[in-house]
Image 1: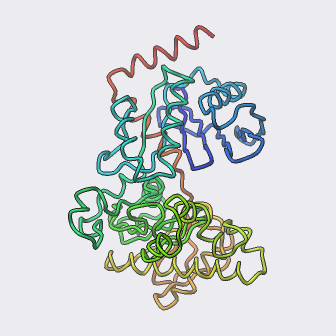
Image 2 (image 1 turned 135 degrees about the horizontal axis):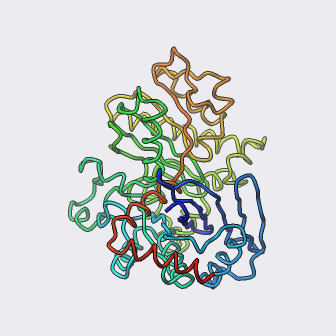
Image 3 (image 1 turned 90 degrees about the vertical axis):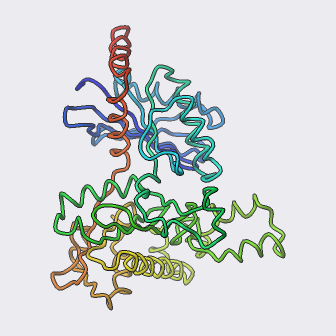
Amino acid sequence: MDETLLLTFNAGSSTVKIGIFQVTEQGPVHLGKAAIDLAAVALTLVLRKGLEGFNIPLSQRPADLAGLIDEVFEKTSAHFDLDRIIGAGHRIVHGGDVFTGPVALNDETIAQIEMLGQLAPLHQPQALRLIAAVRDARPDLFQSASFDTTFHASQPDVVRRLAIPRVYYERGIKRYGFHGLSYQYVVRSLRSQAPEVADGKVVIAHLGSGASLCGVHNGASRDSSMGFSTLDGIPMATRPGWLDPGVILHLLGPGEKSLREIEDILYNKSGLLGLSGISGDVRVLIENDAEEARQALELFTIRIAGEICRLASTLEGLDAVVFTAGIGEHQPLIRARVAERLLWLGFALDPEENATNALKISTAASRVAVYVIPTDEELMIAEECLAVLLSTENFKEMIEITEDRQTRV
């Protein structure tokens, strides 16, 4: 199997991220990665192979995603032997209560994922389009799905309920939680890098353009900031986080906004972008001296600190906090400002360790240990894809197809 590859696909609302892995006896190992910004005027495949980087122009358009993915395979083949691929794993945002782990993608499971689309209208349709495009480009390629919601299935029933008539819970209107693949990876990393707190009461802050927090105990999810949808919780790049539902009623009524307009406001025009009127990118806001930028960052850190406290209440204690994802891993200022709001809880950061994004950034005197652990959702997808593939009855057939493909080349 050392001569075989796996691909991972992570479909955002306007981006596609691709991971390229070699399959070894120890499991998948990173070989390279690629990304496409589907909103760009001129589409470019941004490809990395080790320390090398390539910006490859693409002629196809997002409207023809099948043609675009076919071109991506063609361009990537100049740098990686894609005839060695045995499988492709996809990140799917919403698995509802249907999926409790990764699955092979076939007509039945794809139909089930499609039925859950109304629960994740921004992400699910794009992931399904990508699955279909890969099918068109490589009809014989095994595909699997990994779900962002399954990690949170361990949450107590009472935590997953909303304070609305009980009948709606039975109809699937409940708190699901997201970013599960990221949390799953961080929990595993915590066991190897900080085993002294790994089984304790830990809050993990996944801070990126999409952001959430999760309270874990003994490595299992007990509560999370995101609930029914990816709009909930703390403010994000363009999403508001917690929002009084009365605001929605007002926009629908006196505000005379359509459902589509409100959806656009909530998913694309709110959060740090809406607060600042400048950008949804924390890096841009940190460099900007405008009062609006300062205010957006202040509210961001207020909400993060507040959510840590709420999750600690669910956990009935707090042993450690872990920062992860783009902002969590690379923005010392954000971590410091969150910690400043939690001094009363005994938080104490080491300024030098925090400035260098060290593993442990809290001092010996801190009552709560604070860590920075990079996440790797793509590796989790690759590992789950391989696990599902190994468990399938037609695994030997998949290997034979790959070997035949190489022989023909």
